[in-house]
Image 1 (cartoon, rainbow, N blue to C red):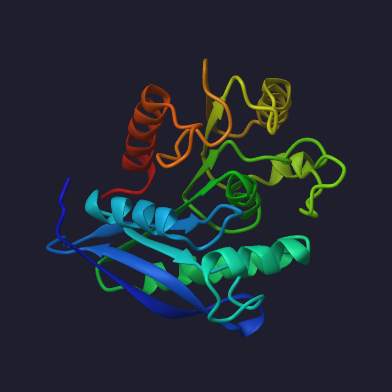
Image 2 (image 1 turned 90 degrees about the horizontal axis):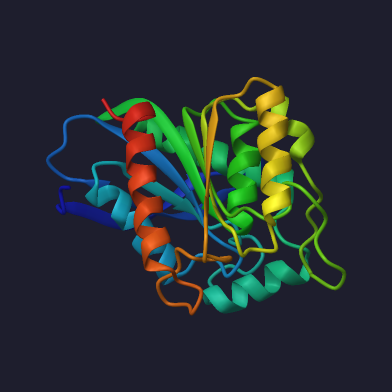
Length: 247
């Protein structure tokens, strides 16, 4: 782990050629590095996800988090931008793929990039990580308890996101999935359904389900945080990215 890093706000070209804000963290004193696109959760482009972005840089990766709500509420606080995005049903899938693709291109163009780029997302971002991995030429993907890859959102939920398990045959890179056994979205049965679809499609993946953990068990600032599950999950992420992104 190398804690020397630089973090800054940058502008990237996203879906449809739009210029959007993004948060970049990259290691210092490293000659060659892989890249990670960090997809923020539904609460938005917030301090907690920026800290996660810096954590990847401290471990030797260039990490970039596009502000997926930039168009919905330019210059607004993360809470206000998230509210504006929820009112519109969340981020359209096509736009998400375009923004993640733009972020991946930005990372590959950095001096020192080894050309390899992965993606990671939490909650709604976990679903979007899977979507990106089925749509873009990425090298590795991590889905942290992504809801509605399988199954529909419950009635009354503002998120307009249909199931995308049918995309399993299109997965273009290895996938790591980290889930809680006490979660409802996704439930263990939904995780098992996705696992089956990927297995039948012959796609490289590994899933881990943690007993005693529910949704958002990585989130250190929420009651759902589970230190043992999160600690083991982070180690699995480092091992996974070392295999597919490092070097």
